[in-house]
Length: 332
Ligand code: UT7
Image (cartoon, rainbow, N blue to C red; front, side):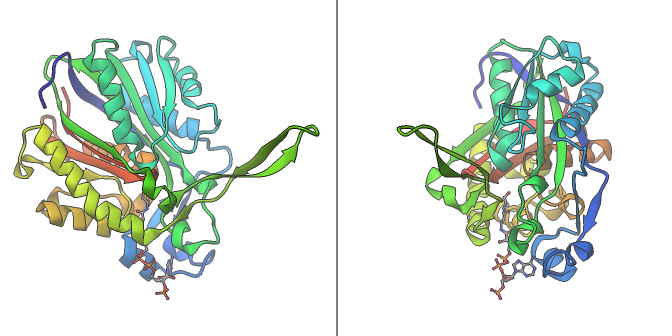
């Protein structure tokens, strides 16, 4: 991509997951399902679930700490904190709470909601502040606790999701490591995947009626979302690679939102990316929404799989519908 302005590097990663894990076997005592069905249709074997007392902010803060430490900076160096989440502890936003917990008192902090695309949308949002020279050090966290909002009697959705957080530090850098991106939305398909507010009319006075209620558990048309992902994700990745002036063969790692192993395989297959380049940890964690990409990234970096200078293409996709891709090289 032709870029003017400051270069951007992703210099640290971190992650955090709840201690409690629920296997497919155990889940089959909650709803009528089986390890065989879940594993063969999704690749998921277990998921981590936030126990009472484990907040979104706690997980996000822990992930953020890991990323700050790896980047070799201190919380006071941060100019901006973006929390990508759909499950904030507080509808007014949870980013400021994380800012306080970290002691990042110079940083401005806000939440960003784009469901499972949140991390990629956050990456691009953060990069605009760095590119224009406004901020130098940004902490981007993707975190979700979807277990709060899953209908635990609906086997079509409850088997898929897990809780977690992942984070990266993005910094102004001499060399530009963020090579290209592309973001998309299609609200006409909004009804495929929702966690929507449902309310009842309430009369305040004789003349004034308002609506009050709460959020309805997640509803999803799984087959539609599946079809959307397999069609749109390869397209948006090709577009991001085009903007980065790269061929598919030059990509070292394909890092997709960890929704379903069959989606990962189908996207890789369409792009002709061999299986050994596909990063996958969804067997252990399920679909952790905005957390899934940075969680898988952090694991792969700490395992020594992803090495400095290697080229990663990442793509998030989900509710909205929203989808997007970004191409970057790991490290300074
Ligand atoms: O972040 C984005 C979030 N969303 C996604 O990534 C979802 C994308 N979609 C998918 O991953 C897949 O569509 C699912 C994994 C959700 C479902 O897989 P599928 O192969 O599309 O299954 P299906 O919905 O066509 O259902 C097949 C059968 C149905 O039974 P009948 O009607 O054929 O008798 C379902 O009732 O499987 C049944 N079924 C289950 N059986 C056991 C659905 N869920 C379960 C379950 N256990 N958990």
